[in-house]
Image 1: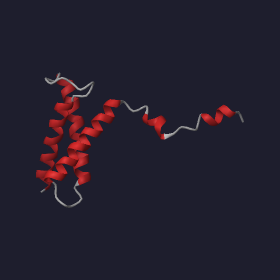
Image 2: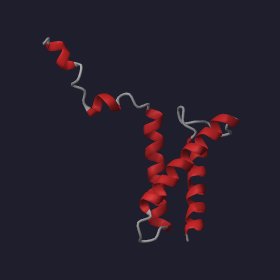
Image 3: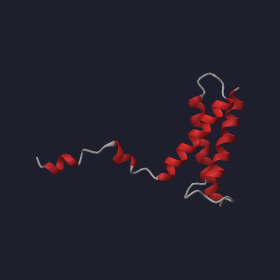
Image 4: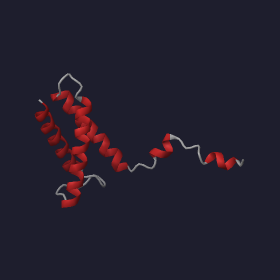
Length: 101
């Protein structure tokens, strides 16, 4: 076998993470921080951390895509509509917490 054939299959995790757009990484980090902050401030002691994280991620990306679609008022942070997405994230987490309790 040729030496170059082995290099085709020697990808590392860093090679795959380099393909992820920075807007996705920033959005995931912001949504995770907001969900964690909501859990610390208002959460219960049960296993609601993953619940808040999932709902927060969904709310964040819904807010981003709605802001992108309607032409948002606030200026974006690069390609990410962070203000609108954060408002949608916190609102959806609050609604989900209210419905869950």
